[in-house]
Length: 358
Image (cartoon, rainbow, N blue to C red; front, side, top):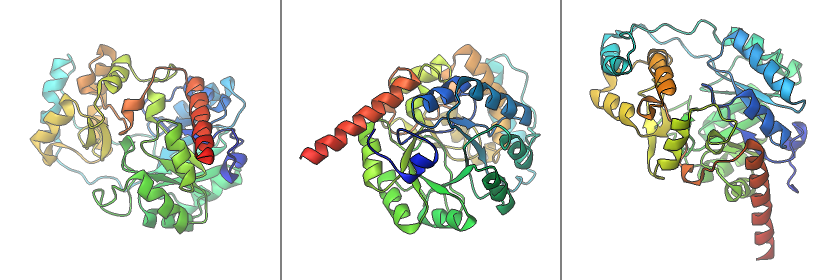
């Protein structure tokens, strides 16, 4: 591909394509390695992994590729205040029973916190580290840079991007409101921070000096070319890889993406306690109808619903899965990860050539 940016050169990328971290099992080592081998940058979504699992994922990826790859964690947050989980447990109990699970109990916080996960992530040999949900300590950034690891933070507003730049990140991921999965908002109201990718990216590019990665709703070469035209040095795509052959999500999840209407996604807190964009399904609709008091703060709600989602995964019951997907899901295809990257690169080139000839 003729496009070459400083960020691409730093990470030895042939194409401005970054596979978004798909925490929760979507980004298998095979997917991460395939994207990197094809000239993009694959990412391990390690936010829900223990330190041992992080080490194992890193070894598995490195066994499949010698090219650069990245790893992602959630920024450390203030532990949620103790709250009565009885109502939240009662709200999901009927679904547990429907899937033959024991009655839900009050969830606990994850065992391995950010510091433990970071220590493991530093040793997997990743060339890039990204984070979302906030800021990470200056000491963490220094440790990553000491390993020659490029550090990228996620922003949903110009103000957040400027904050991350002051913190010392090497690049900013500008997450538009179209993006699937969890919102990275950390410095303002979630509702006010719902800025579309095409509006957000150029404003962030103008506001910071570090490279900007465009994320949200990008599914084909037209989107990649548009992001580059707006000043982004690369793009980050998630939904397009969810339906790839190497994706770890269940077939019921992939089928739901293909069956969904373009307007069929919305933000919800029902699965994790934090706003995230996914395909509307039964669980989302019914739990939201109970009211906010039935949803615990992140990550407690995520821990509460995990057994249900795991059982639904095995049973192929999409109505109980967190079907994270972006608003461009109507452009999803079934193909290998290598084919995704190759197609995106070819489509981007075709768009640029067409514009140059017009």
